[in-house]
Amino acid sequence: MRRYDLDWLRVIVFGLLIFYHVGMFFVPWGWHVKNNVIYDWLKWPMLFLNQWRLPILFVISGMGTYYAFGKRTLLQFNRERLKRLGIPLIFGMFFIVPPQVYFERLTNAQFTGSYWEFFTTVARNGVYPKGNFSWHHLWFLPYLLAFSWVLSPFFQRIRKSPGTFVRWIKHLVAKPLGLYWFILPLYLWEALVEPFFDITHNLIHDWFAVINYSTLFFYGFILVALGDTFWKSVEKLKKQALIIGLICFSGLIICWQFEDGYIRHFIEAFLKVTNLWSWILVLFAYAAKYLNRPSKTLAYANQAVYPFYILHQTVTITIAYYLMDLDWGFLPKASILVVGTFGISWLIYDMIILRIPWLHPLFGLKAKRKELLAA
Image (cartoon, rainbow, N blue to C red; front, side, top):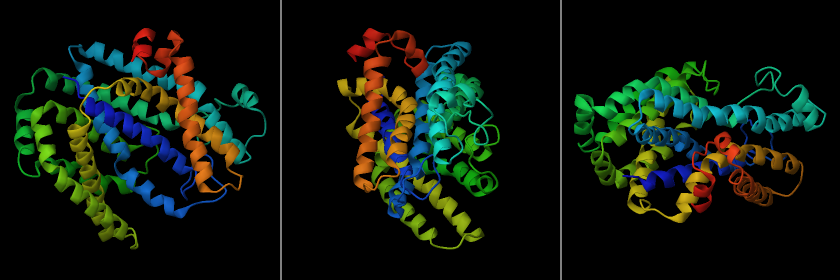
C-alpha cells in the first residue's frame, strides 16, 4: 500500500531545500556566491533546518528503497538504481553544474570570459574546488547510489524473509520511547567520528558523512519493514517527540554559546542526534495523520520534485549573481530568488522536460510523457 504521507514529506523537504539554498546567499557561511550584505539573524532558522533536513531525506530514501525492491531481483534493483541516480548525476555534472562553477569563478575573479568560453575550455579541468569539475548539490545522488548498492544484498534478504532481526526491532520499538534507541549509533558517530572527518561531500574521504547518512538510510528501510508497529509507535510518540525536539534545539543554542571543549562536544553530540531524531519522528507522525491521502497536486509534485532538485541550485546561483551587488535589501532579493527559482524551474520542467521524452531519463523521470502530463 502506497504511503502518500512519505510522498508529501519528500516534496516538502526538497521544497525546503530551495529556501535553504536561497538562505545560503545571505548568511555568514561560505557559499558559491554571496550577497553584499550578510544577515546574521538568518543563521538561526537555517541552523534549525540544518539539524534534520538532510537526515530525514536519507531516512525517506531508505523507506523508498524498501518499496523500490518490490519483486525485483538484486540485479534488476541495482540496474534500476543506476538508471535513476547515475544517469541524472552524469548529465548534471556535465551540463547543470558548470554554470554554478562559472558564476563562482566570476565572483572570485578567477575567470573573466563568457560562459561559452568557460564551458568549452576549462569547465572540466580538474576536480573542484581546485579545478572546475564537480557534482555540487548533486552529491546526494552518488551517496544514495553507493548506499543502495552496498546494502542491497542485506535489504533483499530482509525484504524476502524478515526473520529474527526485524522481530527484535519490532519488540524494541513497541516499548515506550523505544524508537529513541535508534539514536545510540548516531551518537557514537557524532561523538567519536565527526571530530576527525570534516564533511566534504566527495564520497571517497567523507567518512563521517558516509557512516552517518548510510545509518539513516538503513534506518529508513528497517522502519518501513516494521510495518504498522512503526506507524503506531510514532503516532503515540508525536507529542513527546515534539517537546523533546524543542528542548534539545534550545539546549543546542545554549551549548553553542560556550567555548568548544571535550565536555561541550559530548553534550552537543547528544543534543544534536536527539534533536534531529525527534524532529524526524514528529514529521513522520504528523504527516501520517494529516497527509496520507492522494491528490492531483501530490501526483504532479511527486513527479516534478526530482527535476526541480536537479535544476534549482543552478537557477538560484544564476539569479543571485546578478542580485548580489544591488542595494535592494533582504526581502526584495529573497523574494526574487525564491519566486525566480521555483518559477524558472517549473517552466523548464513543465514546458521542456515533460514534452521531450528523451530528456526524461536525464532528469530521473521513469513514466511516459502522457502519464506525466496527466498527473
